[in-house]
Length: 344
Image (cartoon, rainbow, N blue to C red):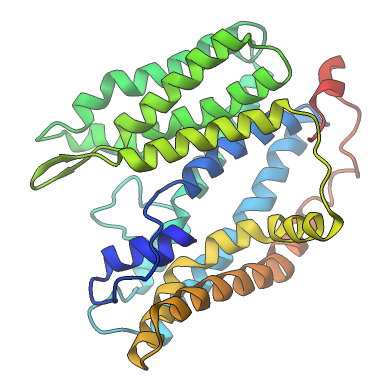
C-alpha cells in the first residue's frame, strides 16, 4: 500500500504531486507469494487434498470477483479525464483474468490483481505435486531447483527483441518469472521443519534472490532497466520470513496481537481494493487542495475500510457457504508428519 500510494501512483499519473514521503520498493506482492507458498505447505496435510484445494479457491475467488466488479463501477462513477475508463469488455476480461496472456488487449482494472491467478495456479500445482510421485522425498527438491533454473535459462529469450508472441503468451501466462517466489516459500517451510540442511537452504534461497534481480529487469526504449533496490528489499524479506518460521513463538502484548491479527484477517480484501480506487482518492483530494501527506493517509484508510467491508460482506460468508460440503476440520490428518507442521 505504501509503494502504490507514494511511488507508483505518481509514476502512473505524473499529474499527481510528488509525495512528501516515498516508499519506492516493490516488495508487497512478491512477499505475498512467498508467504502463500509457505502456508500452502503448512496446510496441505490437513484433511483431504480436495478440501485443501477447494478451501483456497473459496477464499480467493469470490473476493476477487467482487473486487473487480466494485472497482469497475467506481472507476466508471468517478471518471478522471485522461485516466483509464473501463468498458464492459474490460470487465469481462478482468473477471476471466486474461491480462497475463494478452496484456496488449486486456488492461487491468486494478493492477494489484495480478497475483490472484498465480496463487490459484500455485495452489493447484501444490495439490497435484503432493498427490503425485514428484511431491515427496528428495524428488520435491529437484522440482524446486528446476522451477528456478528453467525460467532463468529462458529469460534472455523472453527479453529479446523481437519476441514470438505465442512464446511470450505462454511464459507470461503461467507466470514463469514468478516461480522462484513460490520456491522460496516452500524452501523456507522445508528448512523450518528441518527437511533441508542450512547450506542447501542457503544455496536455494540465494538462487531465488538472484532470480528476483534478473526477473526485475524490464525493457524500456533506453534499454534494460534494473530495480535492484526492490530486489534487495525482497531478499531481506525472505530472510526475515525464514527466521520467523524457524524461531520459537514470540511473546507479544495483547493489544498488538489483536491489532495485527485483525489486519491480517482483512489483508487480502485490502490488497484487492486499495489501488485503483485509492488513486481516485488521491486525485480528488489533490483537486481540492489537500496536502500530499493527508492524501496518502486517506488512500491507506480508504483501502483498509474497503478491505474490511469486502472481508465481512463477501470473503467470510462466501468461504463459509462454499465449504459447507466438507465436514468441519476436514477429516483425519493425511500423514504422520502433520504434527510437525502446525502454524507458528
